[in-house]
Length: 428
Ligand code: ADP
Ligand code: MG
Image (tube, rainbow, N blue to C red; front, top):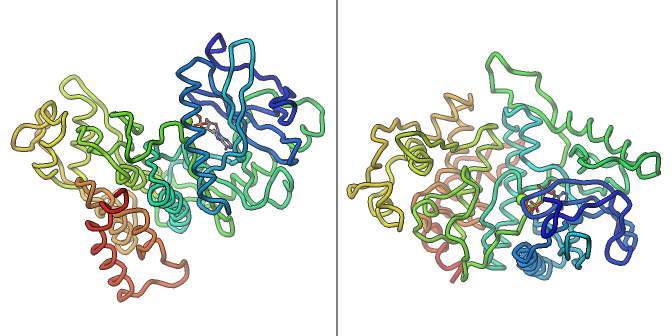
């Protein structure tokens, strides 16, 4: 990929944008880009420098991403909306061509890595709640205020961050955003290297702190509980390469397989609510360490059909109208709304799954599935919006006190009332 039209090769210390940014080490990469930690000599801050592949289609995609990211910054001058910030953008010429570059605020580990660090056992529900709240604030902003659909929401695209800048104050920062193992070579012997080393040992401690299983999760492989208390888990939504305006969706197939909504599989059209489906899948994964749906194809049926079967085993039969209403319905369903190749489904509702497999208490399971199930409605317009989810009693439940049944009733009623009416109005 490091050839004409491809990635730009970066060496540590390389200057960008007339010397304003100095490359420090590689943070990650995607299909279209490599992302570097860079030092911003103008603001004396660390930033993430995303360097796009140079071929025309990648440059165009970057311009789209810059347009989206600019709208995000412009709509949120006070930076409170849990979405990554674009700081600067420019073009950089190299041996492989001209590369669009984006300078983003420097964030930390992805939720996927957090889940891995926790040995796929699921985070404590209070931590799941904190993270979900951030994601919902981000989604509410994107959907309601900007009219944007993210289309690729998943744990990998949500990054943690600390309120104290760890590059400035590696000692005080409770959660270092540099949990990622460096991809590039470290800068040998320089001051930067010393900071890096401090950050790395800091990061090791932070990893130990943020990883911890739910106490109620039994089983023979259970590892000692680790303490998450006091770590301010906050996060931001990233990767706007695939985001689109609600009024002009440009791709039919969106979302990463496991987080893909039924209307996308069936080609029935999608809107903001498609992000809400992915959000529910993400929340489940945070709480259990397992993907909610992990479909596999086989010789007798395809991945899509398996995916729909898994959905119906958890959520019940898809209403016939919805099952048969998409452009791809004929490939997958018969005219009665039954899957063509997978006939016998074993119903195992979310509430039971949480209790039986993940050892949730009855109360925890009921509350969490009360929160998630409406988001997994087959009818997209029935799913609550991010704004409505932010009002839900599960999200607003404080750690120490139990929400009284009375409050819960009111919140649920609010949620239910709003469900069908509000959703359609959002995108106009
Ligand atoms: P692509 O569009 O090529 O998939 P992404 O925006 O997903 O690129 O970024 C690729 C990787 O770079 C991410 O998975 C993450 O590890 C890292 N990364 C991206 N943005 C940031 C950031 N703001 N701070 C820290 N790391 C980042
Ligand atoms: Mg990506």
